[in-house]
Image (tube, rainbow, N blue to C red; front, top):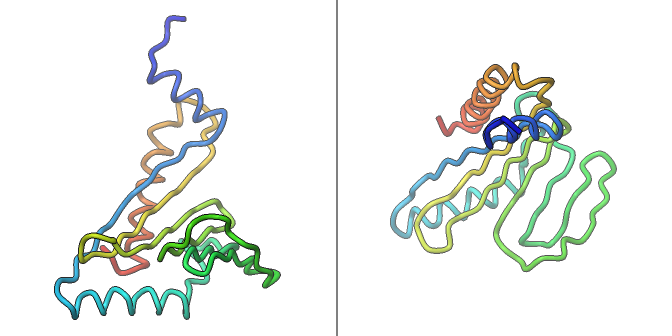
Length: 145
């Protein structure tokens, strides 16, 4: 009692970690654009990133093949969800990069998910800025910024 909803949310971040997300959409118009987007997905499947912002990729989820690859062991497991042209890369530090072409527009979308522990509410602004900076580094690594 005596705290705001925002204050309670910050307390949840302290307990569970602070998560942030970002999105970049790249438009490629016309038939050539559609072909370029499809080739980008083929290239990501053939040559997935090894790391993101210095953190090793540990799992690659390919929703088109319905398989998740454990990069370290090489073992695959089934993904029990409808097939979709989506790739997802998960790193050792819990960073997530998801890539998918739009089904209705001539664009490819990149979704970024980052997280850090939040030791105390007093660290909120510092950690928030660090997470924003990490999203920007991800964009730069992928040549999106």
